[in-house]
Length: 150
Figure (cartoon, rainbow, N blue to C red):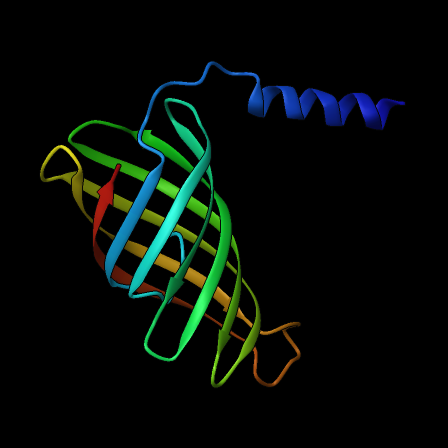
């Protein structure tokens, strides 16, 4: 019973806040991305937004593979220059590796126009299963991309 009440309380905290009319569709083009990892072109849809956070689903593609993603973005500072962090769970399929890839990112966005931003930051990712897996590794990569919201 306590577990059920705890789960309902957490769901209420996440989804119980007032929704604000924000742009929900995002297209990103560039050298990787905070939401879709190693994608050069990506699309994400914000399934739930508040003033300072969003929960999203999306997908992206690079030259030799694709990524499906879901995650959470938290804004620390939001204006023409914004700072945020992103945590995602991704499914990656490419010619060398297929599997689950959790990521965490910190980024800065600069508003160029009403619907366009430049974003840059760092994405930390973990490929593979356990730390004892010979093919597993964790790395931090920089990224830069153009983003359009509509």
